[in-house]
Structure formats: structure tokens, C-alpha cells
Length: 350
Ligand code: BTN
Image 1 (cartoon, rainbow, N blue to C red):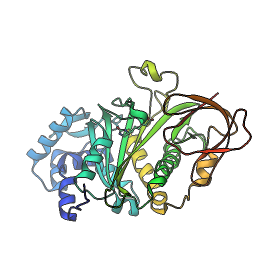
Image 2 (image 1 turned 90 degrees about the vertical axis):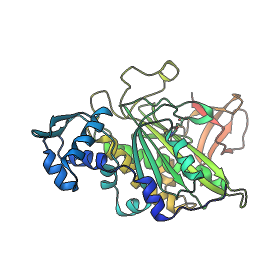
Image 3 (image 1 turned 180 degrees about the vertical axis):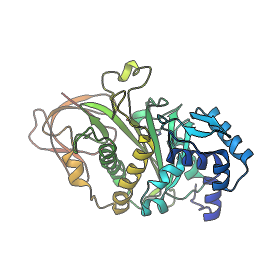
């Protein structure tokens, strides 16, 4: 479908539909643990006390833990880690604030699907959907992505890249580097360089996968180039309350342990990631993050299985990353190095 941009006014209207609820949440979040009276909230937002009361009730129905009443004052429970567009925006740097249009939602089918539908309605690049839970999280190779409530962060960005289709992998690898750096910024318990990247773009901590990325593209029939790309990333912040599903229980891990994830981490991680991603995305096709991408590789100098789309395995030695983020390997019994670039190929360290 041809790209028909919405006017700035229409986009603003579409993307900032909500308002009162989110603003109240942002105010309560600033004073987490101490109260805000109904009157103070009403005066600050220039709305009636009834509107405050209605918004508080709606937030409570969504599961946000707000204690108190309009007379005694409202308090956001100190342990709450609710995603909020205003909080995320406040943590963005200036460039990010003018590029991204942040939409935080509690539950969604898939943030990638939502951004794809925005793309097809002509939305500008920079639209971002961030969710606490996905009911139809999409993973690579047509798999689903486990996206439980309370312990994860699911984020997608609509992009309109001016890149060759063959450079699509650079969007994904840029996101992997941004995610690794952002993850270390929000977790003081880990060191710089602890978060590794398993080629192409899975994030690992202590040999467990803590984050996955899925970039989906829409092509323009006229130019043969990108109409849009949607870059989606899912983070496991803490172990899920009900445990990991059987199929990933041996490989999945989380950025924090059960009790070590501080309140407010979700908003911070979202903002740090968006801030880290923007400059390296804007610099593409220059791969300004190449040394960071190389440095964090989990696979290098190791024996690996290279698995193609049909599931066929071939043993190889991983020897390097080329300057377009391809993985250079030497297959068993061969002498010449080969560069792997296809997103259909996966690797397993032996
Ligand atoms: C993978 O490891 O297979 C990639 C997983 C990508 C998951 C993210 S979560 C946010 C975005 N929305 C989706 O439905 N998928 C991506």
C-alpha cells in the first residue's frame, strides 16, 4: 500500500488519545509511596475532582495498585512498576523525544502487529508501542514469543528506513547493541560487557537468553525498497511467576533475579533502549556500533552447529564478524571461511 502520511495533527490525535489516566499515573509515580490529594491532582491537571476519581477507578480496574481515597490522598504502591507513556517520555533525551511517539499499553496481542497496522495506515516512523503483556507475542521463524504479565517488557518501533533491503539485518543488530547497553545501565548488579549477543540478535546473560528481537518488513511495490520496518524486542526482566514453559525452560533467563528488579525498571529500560537505539539507527547504513557488536559476541572462537531453515545442521568454527554483521565461519572439513548472513540460519554453541 502506498505511503500516505497523516498530518502531524492527525497523528498527534491518534497517538495521544488517552491523557488523564496516564498523567495521574505519572504524577503518582513521581511521589511513589507518598500521597497526592484528589484536589491537588485536580488542580495540577486543571480537571474536576470527579474526573480524578473516575481516572483513579479506571486505573485500579486495570490492576494498578493505588491506595487511599480522594480525602486521604492517593498513593501509588511503592512496589508498582507500571508502564506509563509520560514517565517513559520524561526519561527520553531531546532527540528521542522528538522522534518517538510513545504508546504504553497494559496488554496487547502483539506490539509488532500494532505497529504494522499503524504502518499500513500511513503513520510516521517513530511510533512505538510498549506493553506489559502480549497475548500473541511473535517470535522468529514463525514461533510464538512467551510474553507474560508482570515480568517482561515488550516494545516495537515503526521505522521507515532509507536502506537497501539487504541491509535489514543492520536494524536488528543495532537494536541488539542498544538493548545490551540499556540492560546494563538499568541493572547495577551486572558489569559492562556481561550482556552478550548470540548472532544474530539474541541477548544472553550468564548463558541464558534474556531478550529476543524480531524485525518485520513491508516492501514498497514501486521502489522495491522498504515501505516500513517494525523492530520488536522482548525483554525477560524477572523469572515468570508460574515458571518458564517447558520448551524454553533450559535456555531462558532474565535480566534480574526474582527479587532484585527495582520498581520503575520497565519505564527506565524502555527509555534507555530507545535513547541508545536512535543515534545508531539514524547513522545506518554506517555501522557505528560494529566494535560493540563484535565485542559482545557469544559465538566467536567456538564450535557451533549452523542450522538452516529446514533444520539441517552443519558443524563449523565461528571465526569473526564481517563489517555488515555477517558471521564468518569455517565449516568442518573445509578450509575457506564462509560468511553467514541469512536470518533463516541459526547457530548453537556446542
Ligand atoms: C525471538 O527471539 O524469537 C524474537 C522475539 C521477539 C519478541 C518481540 S516482543 C515485542 C515484539 N512483539 C512481538 O510480537 N514480537 C516482538
